[in-house]
Image (tube, rainbow, N blue to C red; front, side, top):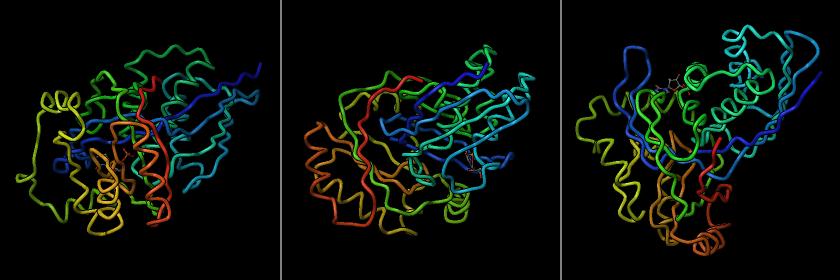
Length: 290
Ligand code: C5P
């Protein structure tokens, strides 16, 4: 019998993102605070009668075989031996190449949906391992909410998500390549000793402080921001409209502002709309369980 599952795949922002040097495996070590936000893609996953078939339907910036859906379906089959046909259809709201983790979140929601549809009952450790094969941010999205993330992204320690602040997310209208941003960092920052480096404990404690007191920063921001002056422009504009904190998420290009109340977000959005290039995406910062 064919079955279907619908799921939401939320975006994330990195409130803090410290990137270390390139490791032997080609990845970079990280120490980051991830926060899920209400902006989300919607996926519908179906099991098909035809075995081996994988149908992927959506608007992507790459061929379907290069999507995280395809990679996740392959990883799921390798691990479970399941050969049943799979169809996934995605309605994207999260811009691609934006630092919002859309592809990784889609993959996490898809893996959970597959596990439910095929009743494979994968444990959390196996799911996280599968997720890490698909992309560095997938293990976070399998947990959702807020977390301290280390390693190359695979070590995820949940933080109790706050619900008392609000975010305004600005996609400036152009993508930034993640691999390209890491390469830029390697070129422009051969030595990272001068960069601030709060410990995991300091970061977890800081997450509970008022946003205007956050010591958070993003290692990519000065470098990607030099290449794209729209990024520092939007950051200053958000602060000018009353954001308690503002920064870039991931390797860009999205900039977010954190506000202490919802009315402030709305008035900042109204004031900024039309003033600069880019699409506003309203996103409330709320905990989103997987
Ligand atoms: O894991 P993911 O596919 O999201 O990574 C995309 C690219 O970003 C990798 O190929 C790698 O170049 C870079 N990356 C990295 N260190 C990380 C995560 C990603 O260098 N921790």
